Image (tube, helix red, strand yellow):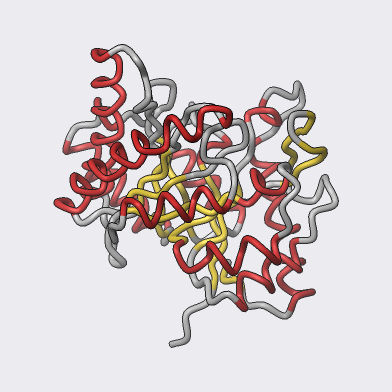
Length: 286
């Protein structure tokens, strides 16, 4: 069977809902995959999730017929205080262990995390960041998991050329990319330039809409801005990407007084599926 891109939704949109409710909402909206979120402010925290709960989550995913392509498990490994840095590392490693335990028929999900640091300190920080991810890749490799960098506007690794340097410097099959193109878009990059460069290294994606240019920008629900999703999907398809296209809803949106996770998931679904139809690109969903 020919592989196609598949449509997923990130629990980042509703991190404090119980996991069972996250799974039910995503399935009901028509998606075929979910990104879970692990952290101290989320309903799922890999550092406090016992073996029984891990089995229950795996069973719920199977019952809902939802793939688990990724777990967001962020930790700042540039934290200057050694004790706090060790705690951040333990958080990301716990997410790696959780990914291994939640492996489905296609294997374990990747673990998405960021590099942190500021853009103006890129030259001073890049070797330290490379060392951090090399260590994480070794740890993840022992569990059969891939760590996926999420480049981020306002952080040291904010541009495609920096990402390529880091991927080459780490040089591990267990270190790849979560292609969240929104951060490149608000930096003024064009997808015709960055997608062909980065799609071959991408094991997962995030999509959302955006308006403005850094430092004056905002992230939006897909369809609220003028981002051309049909062009994006066609470009990803031509680049050979066959993984999940996963909608991520920014905390900027979640703070709206009328924010409704179910309505937002449904609206995003309509935007992405309509764009796929316009582009003539296969995007698997319910």
